[in-house]
Image (cartoon, rainbow, N blue to C red):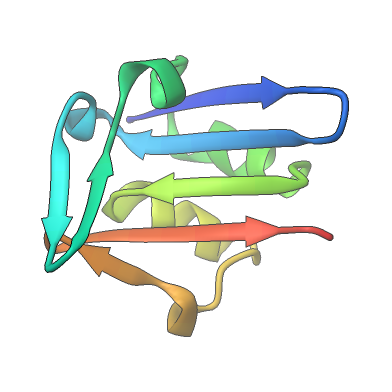
Length: 97
């Protein structure tokens, strides 16, 4: 299961998805630090199929975790070469400009 939250403003919509067990953690890798905050990521708890449908309709996505990034790949948004690891955890972003 993954948390998915939609952030909308006048300019764009961002879909943030993270693996359920990562909420509240801080990931570090060298100088990079990523806080998996409840405010940004903790929305609805969804299964893989629902996340993929959500991502396929998204303009911009921010994915953290094995399951979340795999959904981005399965949705055809993320190329494996663009995945970075922070603290051993995969992170990927997609922007539809």
